[in-house]
Amino acid sequence: MEITNQRRTAKSPASRVGVKVLLGVAAAAVLLGVFALYADPQFVITMADQLWACF
Image 1: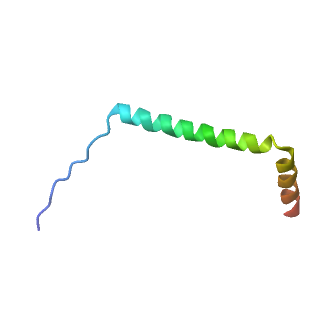
Image 2: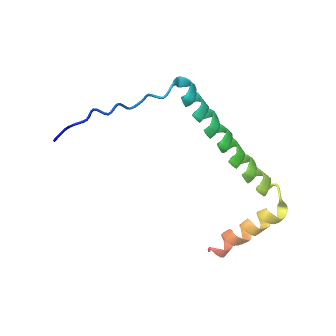
Image 3: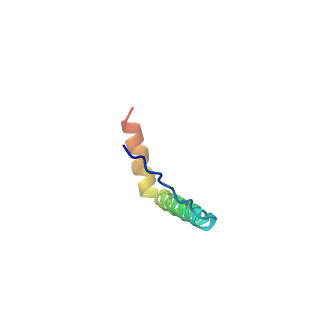
């Protein structure tokens, strides 16, 4: 049985920063989307009605 030595290539620090920036932008977009939904009064009323329907 032959064991092969597989090397894992380390990511450069620049690509790690790029991934972190991309994740930050994605998180900010999600938060802005949620904020936009809650800025609509009808959405807030609908969410409140659905919440009270659970009880």
